[in-house]
Image (cartoon, rainbow, N blue to C red; front, side):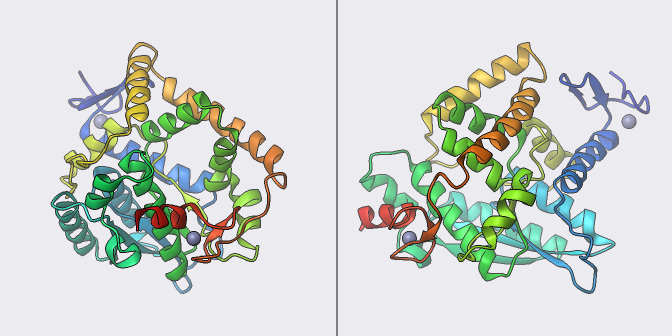
Length: 324
Ligand SMILES: [Zn+2]
Ligand SMILES: [Zn+2]
């Protein structure tokens, strides 16, 4: 097959758009989608200048998604540095697995010349995921604990580093899976949160929230969310990025796995399914957020850690109490 743009040999075919692309045109198209997302989500205010840049904290796990995101962001702002990037990695206490991926993070940060910070569950919470899995007092998946702890650290450290934005490398497959899970679970609160947490809600939602008493809300963004997982992997491979591709040994989100398979099949038979799910979901989330706002209790401070919560004790402190 030939590239639809230049006639050279194609390295990929995107069924959802019908395009065949060569290596160069494919990489360019991934980069363009990320930059368009940054523009359309208004991530970069006009008053950010090389003299007074924004600070963006990027969650860097060493997996292909965050490695590709950090690389494209770095390349985007290299010539006119209106954004200063800080890579933030989290060691969950998963022996072997996380040590290897942290090596990938260090290699990348050194290559790009960006600041790199590492925080650990052990130092922050006195827990290690390897032990949490054994104990499992709440009888839930490892990913459920891990997700709560990771979100807490990402947002807390983004605040500590004075970040203007907190960016994560979610791709369109991750986002469509989460959307389907929330939809199938009938979880409107969670759907509304998608609007608040993504930059779709940036102008109305997040900025309003972050003006509140709690300083804990650094607006979050997912500039890779238009790019399918396979394309992220191909991009990392073609550009020979130091991505660690092994799956977490504790990954066991059974329901997410089922949804993932369902979406693979649907996408195969009906290319474009993920894109249409996300287009509809974002509109739905905006509606849900406007309905929910104000009716859901205000954010207060957790009695134990001072983090933002709508209850007396936040979810993270609940889980930590169960673990110790
Ligand atoms: Zn081409
Ligand atoms: Zn708390």
